[in-house]
Image 1 (spheres, helix red, strand yellow):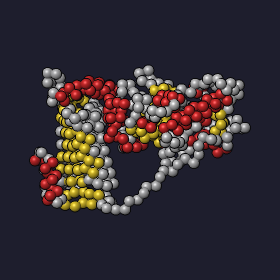
Image 2: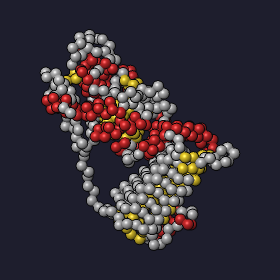
Image 3: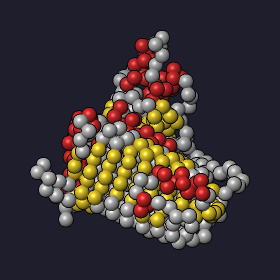
Image 4: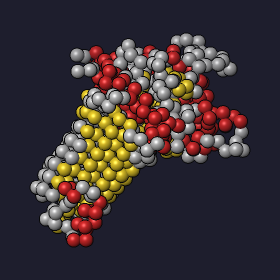
Length: 524
């Protein structure tokens, strides 16, 4: 059996070859085939993943073999038929494609689908139709646990038994079960189908063998109280209790210092240049577009500075892929400079499923775009291990993860994990902060070994963001001049001092005045 890198590369190559052929085939109403030779001889695929993302209207594809995860995801039209088995997340983020799997499918079939239809003819795994907001999912055979979990709208029909907790957390839509159905969880009601409703559902099904009988049951959300969720616990500290010091002579106040950082260090990656190691977190990349009457200085700052956005990216921006924008990543990625997957905001994925998502996203993004992962600081060890395993360019830890871990405590956690998992590689580390970073904050984090920082901008106005970025760059430059170094690449841990006992206790930094870490950091 082929090893993982070979399967990933094979999958990327298939998607690359399909791209220019899709539109031509759609115009000619032709079917593209995967798993057959040009002469029509079957050569079944084995393990390819992330195939055929973002299928457009008119595309018609047929595949043969056992495929992996994230196949035919993010489609907006056309048809995809698989003569074989599929892995997890088949047809995820579907908005209009007709997907047919003639055998079994894995977990999360139709995850977050909003339109189109998916048909699985030999059963599926857990969480089928999870968080779907529209479209139709038809399953013949047994379905696993939590089918339709968190769904908001749409229709699921199962001709077979379903596992425990069907419809858990659903707020809309219908789940029709023609088979054994366990007692639904709280918030979900089970009722018989009405005659009009039965006819309406069967009219959707062209195959009469898939028609629903009158004794099938329907699961729906129960009217209940809307309880506002409590927010995460937040860090009660920042980086103001860490100082920067040096015995070097300070630089002249007009001396030029280097604050530029690169996102993507691998030679094959199309790196992004950041004027300072900071990615402002914005909803839309259009926020960084200067007004026509803006000063040239404001225009230059905004146009050359990348941001971390969820929609409407510019060519220099990085797209944050999460639940919020999963349905529209096929439109965003071709226009962006890179992407970051928010693992803590998506369902848990094993290594094969994450590879499938990476293949799908890389196939829709520009060539050799830098890719990153975001996860909670409490899972930084796993984050770094996964980043190294999957060849990720940036591993970013979210500080405000609900644990309340402070930024000072996160520094040694990240440093130890980086030394263990990322030493000698090209994966960069990052922090996603819960506050707007200052020049001092950036200098402290760079000295701690953090490469890229992302944070919310302290203001929403486009011109104000430009002034904030320029002011932050000037503050960072002033910090570097004060401690006598002319580049952020020269910042080291030796430049840092904890300014109080509590910060020294959790960070392992030298306590100012004591000039050594506290004794417990030397204990085994």
